[in-house]
Image 1 (cartoon, each protein chain N blue to C red):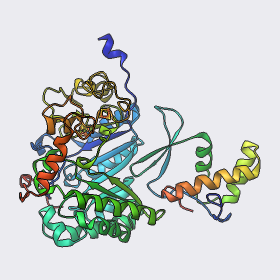
Image 2 (image 1 turned 90 degrees about the horizontal axis):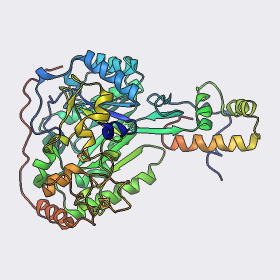
Image 3 (image 1 turned 180 degrees about the horizontal axis):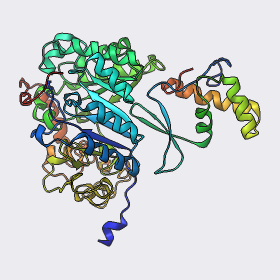
Image 4 (image 1 turned 180 degrees about the vertical axis):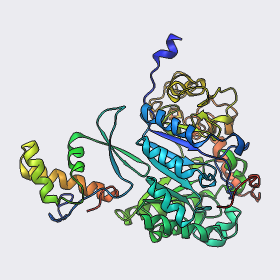
Length: 371
Length: 95
Ligand code: SF4
Ligand code: SF4
C-alpha cells in the first residue's frame, strides 16, 4: 500500500471522452478497438458531467469529445454544456456527418470551444472511398462553413496513408481555403483498425518522405496564416515518439461505458486491469488503477531503455506498438534504432507498402440514428 | 527589426474565440488554452493578456503596465510587442 500511495503522479492535462463507438463512417484507420462497445452501455450525460467536474479538480484543462462519432449522441449539447460549467476547454472531434447548421450553432451557444473536423482526402471521390460513404466529403465541406461562421476555431485533420499521401499538400491548401485556424497532417499510426489494415495503408517510404518534406515547406510559407501540426510516419523513424507524453503522465481516455484507459489502444495489452468511473473517482483511478501504474515512470523498463538517457524523454516509446510488432508490451518500442529488433519495423513497412490487400472495414453501423 | 515592431500602436489586440486565459488551480499560475495547445503564461504574459480585451489599444496597454509595474517604457513596450507578435503567429492573439 505505502509504495503505491507514495507515487504521486503529475496532474493530467487532457481527457479524451469517447462518447460512443457508433459512427456512420468506416475509415480503415479508425483508432477504435476492434471490439466496439454497444450503445446500451454508454454513460449518460449526467455521469459525463460528474466525470468532467472530477477531471477539472484533478487539473485537466482540455476535454476532447470524441468517439466513434460524438454527434451520434442526441444529448451532445448537454455534454458540451457540462464541460463549460466545469470550466474546461472543450474540443469536438467529429467527422461532420450528422451535423446540421442548427446543431453547430447550438453547440457554439452551449460553450463549445473548438471543432476538429476530419477529412479523408482533398479529392472527393477518393475521400468518399476511404470513408466508405458516398457523399461524405461534400457534407464535411458544408459543415466546415457552418463551424467557421460561428467564429469557433476549426481544425482540419487528415490521416495520411497510401491512398492520399500524394495529396498531403493539397489537404493543407484545402484547410486554408476552408478558413481553418489549424490543420493536422497525421501519418497513420498502426493501432486498432489501422493495424488490421496496415498492408492496405502503408505508403512507400519515398512517398511518405516526399509528403513530409513538402508539408514542412508549407509550414514556413504559411506561418501566421494557419497552424500546421505534423505527425511523423513512425515506421520510418529512428527514435520513437513519446507515448502520450509518457504513460499515465498527461492524459486519460474514458471509453463509452466509463472504462478509464491510459491510451485508446491500451486494451490490446493483455493482463492490464482497468477501472471504471462507475466504481471509482477519477482521482482514485489516476493515482491507483493498476493499468495506470503498469508503465508509469521508468521502473518497469528493461535494457536498452533502462540505462538510456532518453528514457525520461520518450519513456521507451509506445507500449501498444511494442506489443503489436514484437508481441511484448514491455519491450523497447522497435521504432527505436537502439532496439535489438529495430529491423522488424523496416521489414514490415517494406512488405506492407507493396501489398495489394483491400481495406477491411469496421462493422457496419448498428444503431446510428439519422440526425 | 525586433519582433512585433510593425504592430501599430492603435491596434486593439484580443484573444479570438477558442483562446482562453485560465487560472491553473492544480499547478498554480496561468495557462493560455487554444486548440490542442496549453501554453503556460508567466506573470508578465498573464498581465499583458488580461489587458488584451479588444477595447484597449496597444499604446494604452503599455501605459497601464508602466503604471502598474513602474518599469521603463521602452523595455515594457518591446516585451509586449514581442509577446503579441509571437502569439499572433500562433493564431492565439488577434491584432
Ligand atoms: S502505448 Fe502507444 S498506443 Fe498506447 S498510449 Fe502510448 S502512444 Fe498510445
Ligand atoms: S532505448 Fe528506449 S529510452 Fe532510449 S531512445 Fe530508445 S526507446 Fe527511448
